[in-house]
Figure 1: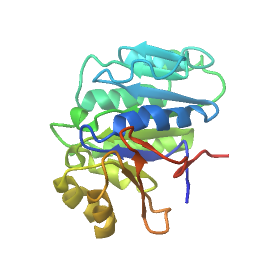
Figure 2: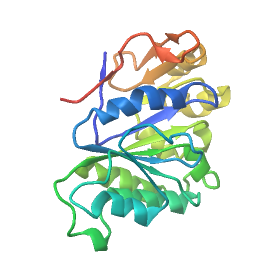
Figure 3: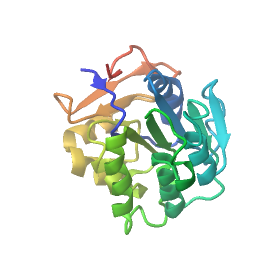
Length: 243
């Protein structure tokens, strides 16, 4: 059963280092997102892994640059906006979200037709390493909740679910894509939310295999095997574009 990708919801992509999640995001998910009309991608790239993912790409350095690139003209400057941050931390992550979600006061009168934004936060634990999102989840929930009214979607990428804000897990029940994870993450983070069947499916994943976990699936989870040594699935299944 395919999952209909919506532009106003939270998704999560999880997998330990070397499991295949980054290549999957670049080779499969980003091209899919870019097929969605009037949708712009914001990638927060602290590790420099997304330098050339689109021909229409602009590199930025901070919150003001991001807000100007999105809202200082009738439409954003390019389809993909890659932010190379000069800082990390929870407050900075929230500032980037605020800059992406809507125009600052100096740009209020400059935007044209409404458009959708897919905000991708790579390596979520890097930003929330000190708190795990605790103590300020209300702020993160504010961005995730209000964004739905304006076609603002969030994609979190993580190696360690235990170090990821819990709200990113609980708000991603429409689709979480899981590659190989540590046994501790499966036991302490996945199973309490999705149950032992999902935990068993993720534990048994082959190299570069992945599981789509969703409340929309009849069994709650579907497992996909990759082409050997390439980390890519054999068939175009599991993800569908909206009409």
